[in-house]
Length: 594
Ligand SMILES: Cc1cc2nc3c(=O)[nH]c(=O)nc-3n(C[C@H](O)[C@H](O)[C@H](O)COP(=O)(O)OP(=O)(O)OC[C@H]3O[C@@H](n4cnc5c(N)ncnc54)[C@H](O)[C@@H]3O)c2cc1C
Image (tube, rainbow, N blue to C red):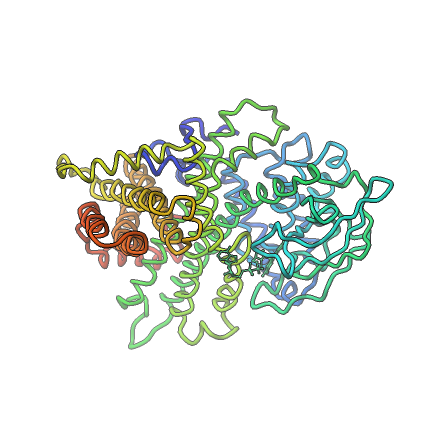
């Protein structure tokens, strides 16, 4: 399904160094009928078949969970990323994004489904031999067997390569697995697990392990949320795994684990987007119905601020998700490959690993903010179980923890940018040097431009320069030791996240205006609010990072340059947020949903 032919390919992270035109980004407004159809299938499946049975799932009816996974397979939802030749439906990554957003209407079932579809089926398709695919992939795609992903252990979560589960080679070429995995989604009932263990205690390797080989599940964890998804330990005591069940190569388990995570992080961002749109609808409807002081609470400025800000944050996340999916698809389309060859998709997700981490962090944090404000809009009703707001809030908290904590993903963002720069894949160092010369030279006066969003685009240019300045100074000051300066790296990540979010929102709004899309002026409002507030966040992060990096005259010079860069006149965001809030209340929905 060629959808992104008009999207030029860009190297991962390159948006930080150059301007992008509105036409060069994929947006939800460019979805094809085919995208909408698969999205609608997912939406209706969850609405009609999952949500009515949520209580049963929350009571841990795993037979029902299995049945629902199977049903999603019959609808083609499990095979979106897998070519038809292997039993999938072989759609593009935009479709994959649309489906992940819709499946998130039920967070618990979304987790069950995600562990199966994203963490088991995708690595099977990408890394399994033909014989392994023959044996397992078809049955995973129909939901006949259910999958799970066993990476984490009690002592190694973030430090995944520190796993202690051991695979001891046997005389017949097979392995004996001993150890324990922790917090495994679908752990209570899955049939096939992708398990990471060290061969002879050293070579980190992925294995396909059937439950019937002898895996024992621990008891269900008592979690804060996601009560309708199974999370248990997996216990391996002399579990015999045949040689042919190594996935990928011995000693190359990190390739499987990390590549899967690039994919999965992006999809988690998508799921968070889906949760955010739903929460906005919930908050907007409640605010319209709930009356205090003789009027709906939606009429109060304080509540309008909340609803408006929810819309702004969701809009930015949605914009960056579709932009990223468009980049990934464009890259896959531009790579000559056989339809059954997953290596193009693998390479594309590796290329956009920075963007995937941004999607994960921005998505999960926007969702947390939105769900917290959703409770606040609900008042006391937000705190009791009669309303779904408190469940959503509990369910979503884990998104900042799994698939790489947000701290680990924040560290990865500048880490990967620097690594690419060092390898010569990203012209970051020459750009930082050119910026230094520019900042030391006389200030240039930008040409007058009163076109739509011109101020915002100028601000985004300044954001990028700020990111480069801070990153350049940090690299110069700390060199190799920058990895020890996590506080500085976190600030740089925050700036990069804001740059990508602000630019994605602004380009989308500009494209919507150019094409006279419905509600384009509201898109412009959302982008303008986001850019306005990002200026203050970026200023604060840059100041903190610079002050933790240099001092004395150097710091004063840098701060003067920062003031020059971020001279952005604030706008009246109250009036814009009110418009966005009113639209959400009138529609009883996130205004930009399709
Ligand atoms: C509901 C649920 C479902 C899950 N499902 C699965 C699953 O299906 N499969 C699976 O394999 N795992 C799963 N997990 C595990 C999850 O991936 C881990 O919990 C996660 O990776 C974090 O690891 P940890 O809990 O050991 O935290 P830790 O790694 O101990 O982290 C604790 C804190 O320290 C920070 N930290 C750690 N290292 C660093 C560092 N180098 N620099 C800075 N900060 C650091 C973290 O960001 C965090 O804030 C699940 C967890 C939950 C709660």
